Each structure stands twice: as structure tokens, then as C-alpha cells.
Image (cartoon, rainbow, N blue to C red; front, side):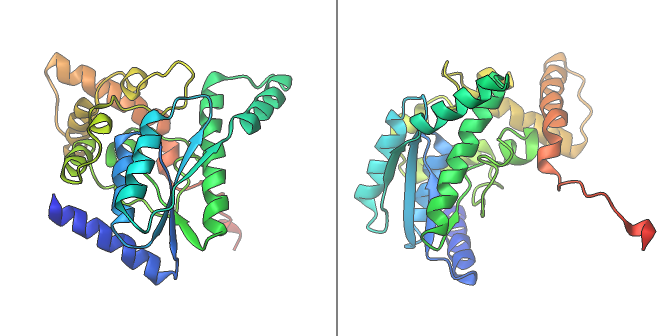
Length: 252
């Protein structure tokens, strides 16, 4: 894993240098993906601002990781902010309009965090760093459009979830984070990623690989896995494709 780690760190440094950016801004959720991505950023030597943003959820692991980064890297300057009051006002306005979908509120939490990250990034000549892995970003589209999907760079988006776990072990990420059940932290009931997706990341990876290879699945267990994977993929494919543009080519 060391060669992969070195490759990603070098890639981040080269990109920041290419565009004369001097800061890396990243949201820290307490999950394995943000822990790995933020640590890789810290290893570049570039100034890193990891931000813990509270909105109706417990951030114990996020806080522990932010403190761990600050203690282990001189170039890290952690930030902890509470967005509860801002989101509460947004909730009230939405309820007044009858726009009270719980899923929409979960996604709006993610979009509010994105706004905060860009506010900080543009105020510090920085880049907003994404934390999505390959299964989420290019398999089932398990992210919020213009929320955690709204970033400048995605250093671990070509890494499978199992790769992220291996990198986390190599980086000595806090054991409590390595062992925690993956969750996006956007729901009041604390539901996990597996609760929302219907199966584990290991199973999703198998289905993703089978789909990419065009494999013919015959086992009932494989068929069920593929069915769940494809359901999520088809539902979220619009996130993974470019924004549709109505072509005016025939009028030219």
C-alpha cells in the first residue's frame, strides 16, 4: 500500500502546484474515507484545514480524528463549527413550503457543508478535497449531488472501499474509525451505509466488478447482489454523467 499512498500524495501536491493553490480544505465526518483522504492531504506538507461540521449528529469520531491530525502534522489547522442553527432556519423555511422530504433534508445537510467548505477554500486560496471512494462515486452513486459530490479534487475516488481500509491500516488511522460501521452521518436515526444500500461494501464491490466484466451471474446470491447494485446504479446514474445540454447543432 505504501506505493499507492506515495502516488496519491504526490498527485495531490502536483495538482495544487499546477493551479497555485496553497491550502487543502476537507470535511471530516468520522468515517474511514474522510480520515484517509485528510491524512493523505496532511502528508503533502501543504496547509490543510480539516473541518468538523455538526448538524444534528454526534461527531465524536470526527473530533478524535481532527485532533489526531493536528497532533501529528504541523501543517494541519483543524476547525470545528456548528451549523445547527443555520440548518434549523432552513428546515423551518422548507416546512413552510411543504418541502419536508426527509431524504431531501439529509441531502441538504450535505450541501450546507459543501457551502462551508467552499467558503473556507475561497478565503484561503484552497481546494476542496473530496472523500468519495470508487464504489460510491462510480458504482452506485452514493453521494449528494452538489453536496459531498461537489469538490475540486478526488484523491481516493479510484480506490475501492477495501483499498481504503487497507490504506487506513497502513496510515495507522485511529482503530475506532477503522472498526466503525460506514455511515454518511446525514440522518437523525444514525442509519449506516449498509442500512441504506441493502448490502455491505464488500458485496457491492463484487457486483461492481462483475458488472464491469460483463459477467453472467447464475447463482441466486450473485443475482440478488447484482439486482441491488443495478437498482442503485440506475437510480443514481444521472449524478455520474455530465449535465445534459440541449444541443443546438442542427441550427448552426
